[in-house]
Length: 169
Image (cartoon, rainbow, N blue to C red; front, side, top):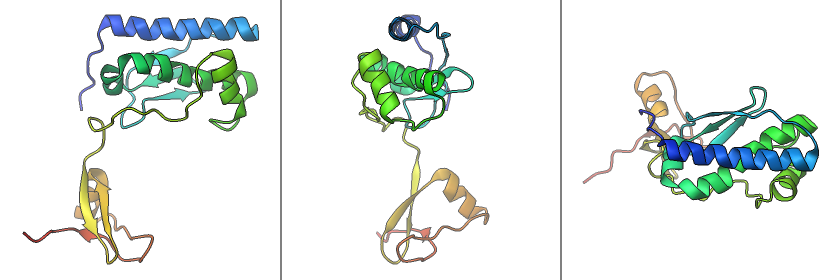
């Protein structure tokens, strides 16, 4: 899928949010944190990810376009908090007490672990498969592996090999 074009005004709003929250952290913690790079290449249903060692935030351009203000208010500080926690405490639980403190006390944003955005536009396509006890939805990637004979998948409940579900009309 082609990465959608982000309007310059939206890029500027993202950067304003990032810089505002970053300055808040600098003031509160007395540390001159470097500004992270923002990359608009996150795919799938994740709104964003923080690349700790690279000091980089990757944002999902589709979800950003669909949820502009909520994305700027929630996702940008969420990912920034991960980078700030990494720089301050090192490797800790991703959404642990340090991250929660960074979000709420330092950045002044409610600490929510996951976004509430509609994800239908970024949800991977899936193919129905069946075992003896239920229907399963395999991603296109897994389905193609089955078709090429590279993989078999089993149900974790009944142990059957999953087979393509061909509903009768």
